[in-house]
Image (tube, rainbow, N blue to C red):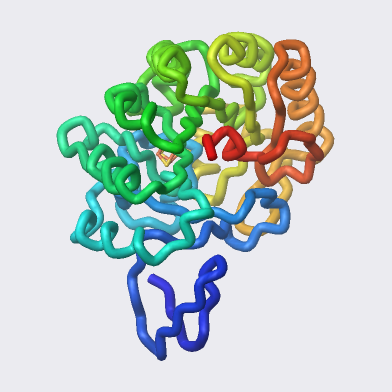
Amino acid sequence: MIQYSQKYELLGQNILYKNAFIFVLITPFDPWKSKLCTCPKKYSFSPYTGCSHACIYCYITSYIPNAFHARLKKDLFKRLKKEVNKIDKRIYISMSNSSDPYTPEEKELQATRRCLKIFKENGIRLLIITKSDLVKRDTDLLAEMKASVSITLTSLDDKKIAKIERKAPPPSRRLVALEEMHSNGIPCSIRLDPIIPSLNDYEIEEIVKEASKYCSHVVTSTVKPRTDSLKRLSAVVPYFKEVKLERIGNSYYLPRNLRFNLLNKVEKACKKYGMTFATCREGYPFKAKTCDGSHLIPS
Ligand code: SF4
């Protein structure tokens, strides 16, 4: 819910709402005004509230009630059709940032697929971020759209990931999805996010090597839990009971030296396997055209 009490500039569009509370589906992306965010101007959109993948490090539980139970947004398609006509179509939509568009419920509900059709009809430029291989179901649509897909790949070990990204498909299936997207000409990137010391830090080079078969870009980030996700992480990864974390904004960060060493490992691996490299909310420099891989969206 956003309160517009005066003129509000929505990425170039001037919209006037007087003292009214309104709900909008497509909003300007603004990760809590983080000074470390390097994202280009983009819109954010999620068909679902909450996400049933239930990753233990996920921080949506700090601001979404019943966050690990995904539910469809009210009057989704009717409202989306109206809102796509009001946005600046030069600016891309990132789907999704506080949920996964291919949360397990999507298999049956097919809501994301219906949203893709609306976006396709309206010439919307789209960046999909997901942990699910269900995205390959929509290859037919995505191949005809101005779209790029970013798949999160945090490990190559299916058993390990089952404990961390509890209801998300295993990495082996995500790699198959990447292969299929790639072979259908859909530009892809990976999110090596989050890097969790003692859990996946020693896999960095192997992950980048596998991804380089199907993708050209890596965006990476070290783990940044909030208070509640830190409790969940500490219960599964003993490392978090020992390390002294640093508070930046609403999140806990690993010590700067450690973060930069980990990011440097990713950077070196990207160089070795011919991929562009970027970081997410780290303050670690990179040369890629965008952090989130949106430069891969066809124009
Ligand atoms: S897939 Fe993303 S939004 Fe969903 S639970 Fe995992 S981290 Fe949270």
